[in-house]
Image (cartoon, rainbow, N blue to C red; front, side, top):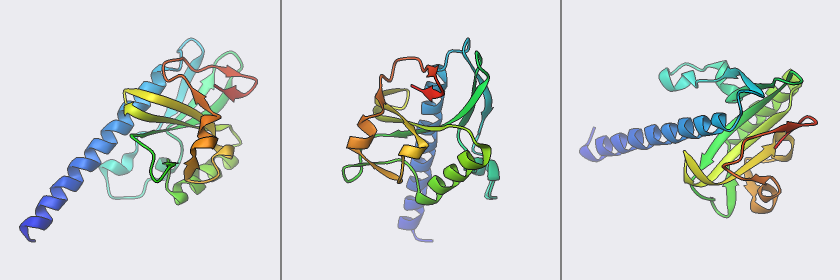
Amino acid sequence: MGLFRKIRKVIEVIFENESEQKGDDFEKYVVDLFDEKYFSIVQWTTDMARKHTRFVESDCGPDLILRYRPTNEIFCVECKFRSKLFKGKLQWSAPKQLGRYRVFAKDNNIPFYVVIGLGGKARKPKRMFCIPLKEAKSSALSTELVEKFERSSKKKFFWKNGILK
């Protein structure tokens, strides 16, 4: 292996680790916006595939499955952080992953939300969106669509009439 290829491989690993860290940081930030008094975490996926080369089925599901304590309603949340738009769109998922999220939501018959942080830092995003999966029709979303679901990135989440805001 030539020196250039070795350097490129090291750079790829550094960027992959940085991207994973941003994802972890944003997930933790989102979890902190769910008040423990009202919400319990049923499941928090840890993305085991990062630690192994084998395919892990649970990695296909959402990051979080939560329960709204007062009514026992269960819903799930996928957390994504993006530094910026790509070609004027919010590229939040791979098309295959979007398909797996849809299958998960249908098979489990529970509401599924995509919470996206945009700009700033993963631990302090400038903007935040809480988009129902059924509205996220593609892996690259227009700014017009996501802006309908914008929320304060500092405000605690609340659940009302089966809708996460």
